[in-house]
Image (cartoon, rainbow, N blue to C red):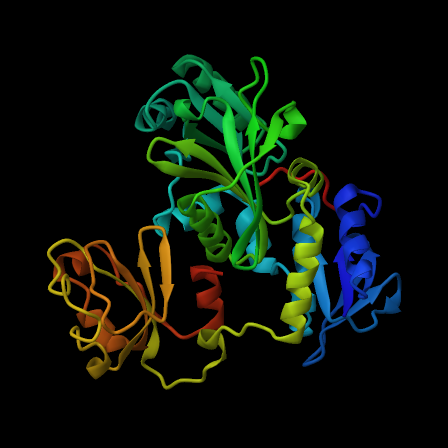
Length: 409
């Protein structure tokens, strides 16, 4: 395999470890400065130049895109995608995860546990928003901060109001987030590669510091995550459209509370803590994808007009509760169940004898008219059903993309 590692920091720990892991496995790996590309566009022939020369062919790309170059970096990754080169993380996934508000909006829709969060612009909305998240103390975050930078704890409503007013005067967008007191200055970092968590650690803040980031002086210890935390980390990664990611979670009294998902997680802290070859796990995954790529059939199928993908929610009181998937007779309506979501569990291609429960969510493919009929009338009046024509761009927005970045290009 010939691998391109996109990074502006060739000597950074993560970049060096990834190149080393690839070469140890017999692959050819080259670190390419993300900002040295030129993107050429022509009808039917997207192309890339690197340092004024036509880029040679690559089998795969591993992006290490820093926050400061997100726009240009994702444009380069997108160009590789247009050239049919496998990208460990897509441009869409990187964009989803880089914007804290956008990522939380997407995760919220998929019933992922989150600290209660609000986003306001008008000064008059600030105090009501603080009350809605449970009142002071609250955490105030810059939407595009990293490594704990731009994360502040306000002990009182007045202090929070002053901080937000100051940040907004500097044209900064901020989130107001509930302070999860039971986490006690601790958080969990899960490193996801493909469909599994390859390593995890708990970080503990030191002294008066409430941020547990290693860059803020936090102490890390290796841990074995339980099933709920593993599944939450994997689901977050998949929902945002990422394949390699770090997921930061607080240990709330009601289970995992996801803070952030990072598309360029640093390796130094977690490899040192766990003594695991995480760089090697990433390279092995990429090599496997190059040899035998996963294909999303929803994006590859050509179907007749009137067919699409929909998520069907089974609320309390639904006539389907207690019925098996076969007994719902969905197949007779030209509706096929692709995946069943139950709590934090994801059950692909569920058996026909599986009994449906309140709160289940079915990802279905089939006739749109039939799926619209399955939406309860009361729900239908409140909002439009989640039924979409089978279109790649729409599907990417639906499901497709933290540890701190130790360093990213």
